[in-house]
Image (cartoon, rainbow, N blue to C red):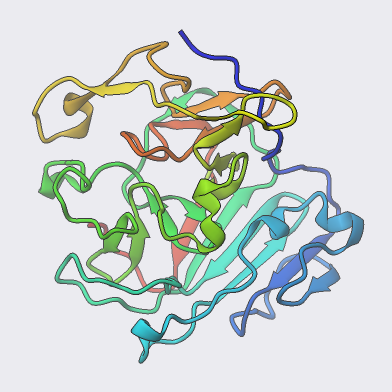
Length: 293
């Protein structure tokens, strides 16, 4: 039976802007942003007046720095722009934490562009997850689904032990991405209740796994997935099964809060981020064709 969880924050992306806001975190800023620029924020600024309050630029990490262990690589870089219909995130895919190789693929600079609906729309039926990116974390790293490619048995990479301590690894194109709980997000975001840690490609926010159980946040609870392991099969959808009411979350690993807003949750157990798409999906692209691990 699901618990009633209050939650104080994490309101989904708000629509209705007839403008564009750009928050530039580094030299990745592009001259090809869409729409008419009405405000620019520099590193360290959390808002740009009234416009930023309706655009999630302030949810993204503003202080992206190269970790000394990653010397020889360019600094992490990201821009976030809001037009009247989309949030456009451009990122070079370099992590802010030490890169530890868990696959034979060396880490390489990427040129990702995520186009996320500014106004999430719930789909008529839940959508199956694709290979590759299903969202983007607030530090600019791609979020992948809870499985590998069919060539690897559509298996759970966490159960297979091929993820680093930050929940990710590199794919064949050298793209670092996270499959499981992003333990290395800056500012300990995963340990902060009601905090946005990413956005799914359908526009709904992905939240930290902690919620305030009362209005003053005197009691904090952990959100629970409703999936459990049902077999030892390698294929994830045979290995894990959804049990309605087992935890707090629905089949897609989200729930609607008392404020009427739908959110996904990043949890420590399968499916980690999403089990399916609740909303209609945006797009993700890279200049260099990206092969899927």
